[in-house]
Each structure stands twice: as structure tokens, then as C-alpha cells.
Image 1 (cartoon, rainbow, N blue to C red):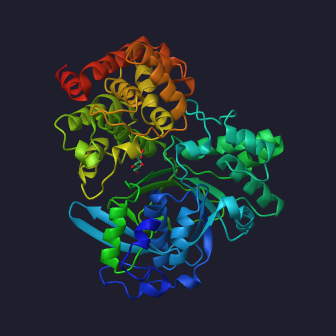
Image 2 (cartoon, rainbow, N blue to C red):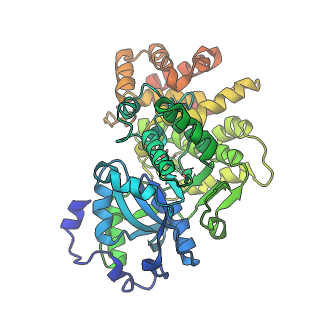
Image 3 (cartoon, rainbow, N blue to C red):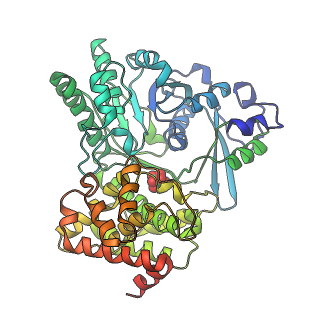
Length: 502
Ligand code: CS2
């Protein structure tokens, strides 16, 4: 990123002074940004939140709200602060459809802070009564959960470290607990915690994780959190890949000034939120969010049909050497396999929800996945399978077995993930496996060599992914081993053809 800027021939950088000089086609804040104060602290500044909740919030500011600006906090590296602070935290959103680009400069992010060197400052802000909501996008693994059960992983090294030094936390459960404790000590009512990651029952799950961490510190604090802190569940959706240098070049050419970290996304966006905000919230429902009493049915539909299909496409594609989701959608067989995943396994696993049409939803997903303007890399989606597969697909498999039917495509997906763990695709190219369990999984895969049964059984033994029940289920085990044998012996193309013929 910084290299791109150094080589740039454009002298100017996007910032407050440039906003009024941007080309007319670029949408930009028309509100008085200096009059906006922060009401939200957002933790986890990846591309997604900047294409989603920051945009909904920007719309609310456009509607005249003054006290719902966002202060962004990142726990990973100073890169985002280095990129955004010189731009007065303005950044560009490039919404792309096949052939159509819309640029918009977002102003809802008022400041960016980093936990490594601004922890005290961040805690001071978090006890300020003007902050009423803490939103999070830290990915599934950020919550230090046992993926199979969704409860706090008490053996997680970051959790052990934070329990030893609870006032200087680095993990998300440790950080939230300390912020809630300090706020209570300051006599302020608790802020609302709005989890915007793809976990089933995300708010409830994270509340239990945080309360458990707090209980390990002090049982009374754990009780306080359960009784007093609201964690509404949400379903968030907008396909937003990591920004590439090529995107920066497109944005710079269109804006006429440099933006060190724009975000590229699709036009579609959706947000369903449980309306439990004791200290108030922005009028997100006036700008397209759907406020409901129970998010769970919407969340299951999205987590399974969108994210589950993404994971399936990702593992089969990475192994086959297909780089992007839109390329996978142009394959002869992969779109048919996704259709089967939806029709045979996922749609039957979902409750019927009045007002939603899951068949239409999956047809819309096909179109969204085909969008060539958003180059969503399959390797990016393949990350963190140990955390993503349980809520996206393994839960559905469990429910189908419990209802007396058998999943057909989920075992193929699990076999593809197992094959993927070899780290080499069918063209002989190596790729990096990004996963909190990467080392453990790669070692199991290497030790099993080319024996599919040994590989499957060694991976099934990782109980914090598969639990006890699925490895003991003979149908599931046999189906996975069958597909894995085929993938290893014949490759993805032939395996898919045989599967579709069968
Ligand atoms: C994707 C999600 O990377 C992934 O695992 O499945 O980031 C997906 O693009 C978003 O959830 C869409 O809302």
C-alpha cells in the first residue's frame, strides 16, 4: 500500500480540504462533519465494516444525526491508522457491478486508534457517556471461541495471558470485559455491544464468551455482564474483498487524488438487527436496516446459504486452481454443485420464515457471486476454515441427521477442505493456509500423506471443529472419506462430474 503511494504521480491526498474539489459524480458527505461527535466505537477495521455499518451510519449522518460518528479501533496493526489519519479518516467506497462503478467518500469514521499504543486513550473514550454502542468485526477467530461449541476457549493463549494481566488485555473478550468494568466503575450505564461477525446467534454467543471470561476474573463481574449488558444479534451482509493495489489505482484515477485505503464492494447490502439498545441507537432503519425481535432465522439463511456456499466454492476452487468466485461461477460444474448444496442440504435445514423466500434468496446469490467487478479471491475465503465450517455447514449437517435425513453436498465440502489442507493445488502450485489451527492441521495433513482414511480420521479427531457426534456418525465419515479418496485420486473436475452423474 505505502509503496503504491510513494510511486504515485498524483501529488494530492484525499482529506477534508479535497472533499469539495472531487469530480461531481463522486458522492460525498454533505453534512457538517466538524459538528459530528462520536457515539460508536467500532473494533476491527477490515474492509467489511467500512463497506457496511460505516456506510449505514454515514447515511444516518446525511439525514441530520449529529452524535453518531464512529471512532475506529484496530487491534492488529497500525497500517489502517497510518492510511486513514492523513486523510482525516475519509475513505472511498467503490461499489462495482459488472461494468458499473459508483464512487462515494465516507465520512462517518471520525478517528482511528490502535490498541497496541493507545489502550488507555481507548478505555477513556469507552467510559465516556457519549459512547453508547461498541460494534465489532473481528472475524470468527477474534472471539477466542471453541468453534464446535461456541463457548470461550479457556486454553487459548491470549485468554490465559489476559487472565494473568486483565487490565492490559489483548484479546477481544479481555478487552470488552475490562472496558465494561471500567465503565461500571465510572458510574456509567453499560454500552450496547453489537457483534457484526458471521457467527450463529452472534450477540448471544459473544455475550456468553465475554461473561465467562469476566467470571474467570471475578464471578460478580460475570453476573453483571449477563444482567446488564445488551448484546443484540445481527445479520450483516455485503461481499467486500480485501483491497488490492489495482483498486487503489482505479480509485485514484477516478478521484483525482490518492486514497491510501479505499474499499471495493458490491452494490447489495443488508443488515438485520435485534432492536435492543438501552442507550439508544442511530436511526439505521431509516436507511435500509431491518429491525426485528429475532434475527436468528435471517442469520441462518445468510450464514448457511451465502457463507456456506462461499466456503464450498473456496475449497473446491483453491484445490482446482480457480482464483476468484466469479471465475468459479463460470465453471461448467461448480454452479450446479452450489445449487445442489442449497436445494438438497441447506434449504431443507432452514425454518420457514414468513416474509422471506429462500429460493429467491439463493437465485439472487447466484447473480451476486457472478459479479466480475468484485474480484473475491477464493484463497481469501478459504481462511479460517476451522472457525467457519462449524457454523456455516456442520450445524446444518447435524440438524439434517437429527431430522432423519442425510446431507449430500456437505460431506463433499468437508472432503474438499481436507484436500485443501495439503497446501498444494492440482496445478502443483503451493498456497498458504491461513487458520488459527494452521500448524496443527498442516501437520496432520502431512503425516497422513496420501491415505484418505488416515487423513480424514486424523482431522475428525480435532474435536473443537467436529465435536464428538459427527466423527462417530458412520454415514458422515464414510461419505467424507469417499469424496476425499476421489478428490485425491482423480482431482476435482472428475470428482464433480461423477458426483453430478450420481
Ligand atoms: C466470506 C464472507 O470470507 C468469507 O468467509 O464468506 O466474508 C462474505 O463475503 C460476507 O459474509 C458477505 O456478507
